[in-house]
Structure formats: structure tokens, C-alpha cells
Length: 304
Image 1: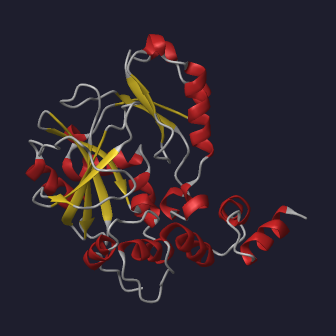
Image 2: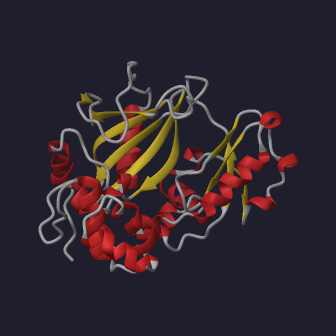
């Protein structure tokens, strides 16, 4: 039986194996709308309603299909986004770029500083964080970056802004916050220029701990939300630049139905991280689910 026939057999029989078969064998063949309906049901546990979407997760799928602003491609490109953001708020908020490579074989390791970060321009995974160049396993780093260059958000989850981003590797200055071992993200959920909530990502570089996500409202009141990762067991302090970050998040999200603006605070200084149009690709359940609908109320879809 061919891969295609096997996959359809599993799909029609609603077998658990259909989960991997769908992603691996059918993502290139199933029409985008049908693909999103299938993967949404599997990931979220309820049917995707594109005619009358109400939850945040449903509306993100709608935006994937029907909100095709070509500027979004530049805004998710980790090289072009820096130019875009610098033009909006100034170059002082941009983490310095050390080099840009077409592939991992072009990396001139001897010319790099002792600490740096390497990541793909079209991808948010497969990041190489080097805190000591003398101990870095270069072969593993190259392997990880090459894996990243092959990965496609568009193929897996139909996040179309990434489809035409040039696949390169960017090397950036290594930055840490007041913890002296990590760089916490402050990820703002913005709706037409209105920052409604954010979450703080911590412990991402701690090999002994799972990454932590803590959600807050626009006044930094902790929200009872679990979404992909547990809350931190430590108190998350309000950053010095909280109000200034809120203003920047508003500036960078003006005129956009929804975008997540990711920022860093380093001793009161703000740095831009990235712009994300599809948080978790809209495929990660909120606990409790009521928050999925609360975020959905904040997102007004454009007239198609």
C-alpha cells in the first residue's frame, strides 16, 4: 500500500496513527482549509468554525487563510524585521547583527566573538546560543542550523508569511538580562495597536527546568492561564520598562488585526525580539478554554 493510500486508510478509520500520517504525508496534498480543519480538531479538541469563528485560535486560522498582507513576510524575516522596526521606533531598540550567512558552511567561527546567538531567519526554533566559543560543539551547531533551514512553518501549519522568507542564518550579539543567565521575553498580544495582555517566557536556557509561561494583563496583574508551558514557581517581577514597552508594542501593532510583539528588558533598556502573527500557530489549547474566547473577543477580523 502506498504512503498516500495508507494515510487515507488511517484517516478514514480515525486511527491514532493518522496524527503523524496527516502531517508527514498529506500536508502537501490536502487543500489548506481542509488541512487546517483536520489539524485543528486533532490539536484543539473541537471543530474549527471558519464561517463564524469566535475563539482566538479559530480566528488565527481564519487570518492564515484570508489576511494576506505582503508586508507580513518582511515583518517575520529576522533580517528585514530589524530594518522595519528601526524605521518605526529607532535603531537603539535593535539587537546588533554580527553577520548573515546563506548556509552553515559559510560561518567563519574564528571571526566570531566568544559569545553569540545563531538562528535561521525564517524559523523560531533550532537556535544556537553560544556562551563560550571554546566549548561549543560546532558540528552539532551546524547540524541544528541545517535542520532549521529545512523546516517550513508554512508546510506544517500554513503560516503563510514565512513561505517566502529567504532562508538564511543570522548571527546576533549575545544578550542577558538581570538574571545573568537568560533573556526573558515579554510577549505582548496586540490588537489593532491595543496591547491587551502579555506573557513572560522564562527558564528557556535552563537545562534543568521546563520553559515557563506566565500571563499578565496590560497592568501586569497575573492571569490564571496555562498555555503550552506551566507557570513559574518564582515571582515574575514587573520590568522597569513595562510602560515604555507597552507604548512600543502599540506603535508596532498599529493597523494590524493581531500581532504578538516580543520585547526584552535589559536593566531598563528595551530591545526588539520579533513579530509573531500566529501564537503557537493557533494550535495550543488554553487552560481554561474560556481564555481562548476572551482573546477571541479582542480580535476583530477584517472584512474579507
